[in-house]
Length: 72
Image 1: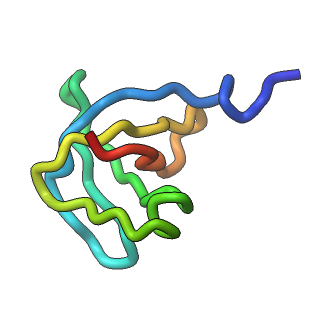
Image 2: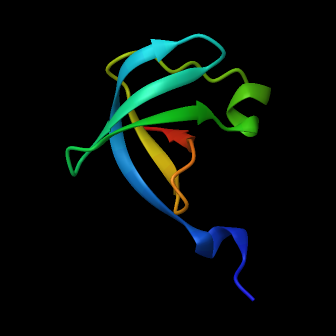
């Protein structure tokens, strides 16, 4: 049985646009642009993510919204 960590992969990218409700448009290193939301721990600790920030994104392998897990 696969765990949640195994179902998703992590990539780095740069935030290109900030949208309402802590949604962001992120351009990955591979050139692909995806939608991502802020992870719960980042919301809890009020870590701000701005346009131009480098972030680590956990990509959902089924094509849903990705999750920003770290600001670098």
